[in-house]
Image (cartoon, rainbow, N blue to C red; front, side, top):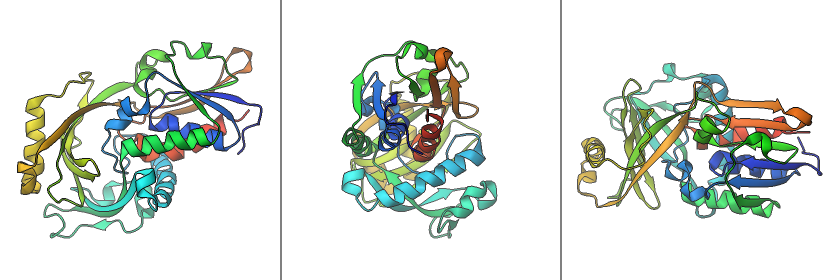
Length: 316
């Protein structure tokens, strides 16, 4: 659905959700600007492991539909991995079963039970998009600029005061104070990046009842090891004890990881909410405010699906 050519849209937020939404709006014919307090490479999105999977996001049925829209986009982008940062890579969701997943799972081509050789503990095998986030964020920004968009680094303290006919709120965790919406809360994720000792498949094993998980994701910049899911934890400082435990858990699955040289430690705060807020609000004077935040640990997974919905809601 095309935006009227004389529309002026400001997208607040420059992470993967904000950038993707801005791309869809700009390519629909809108005059679009991004206002972000920091560049994409300094957002939570840049820290993400980048595996496509509807993780820690509600409501599941809608999230599954948004994720499938994104999956189709990423499958196309994977033809140009060096440019887009997207590759299709095999791996196992350890401990997961098809009966535990929503209807969306039946529409993921090739998703099946893992063999004992693939993962002794059982799980699901899949060939899914892996998104190298720094590369992908740069590509999104360049695509947005090529569509006539502009990016400004500026801090917004009042959404209602943003002077545009249409404002799209993609501020993630920032929505907690900006809306304000106290139901948005951080779920802290800590990662370790090591020199890849030859691992070319990904693996995740998530304990949804606890704050620890085990996963490794091969990216061009190294093997990403995780992780944690600490509710309501705000610290962005890597904890050396947690880092050591992450390496040990991953090495228990792939022993060669134990001796890998550590390249980096990363921490990101997932913007969790009991449900994604994706809705249109009409402000005094007829201006439109579209909310698109609260994607938890699945921002990159649902980015394109949510962007399409946000673009329809923004139509004036």
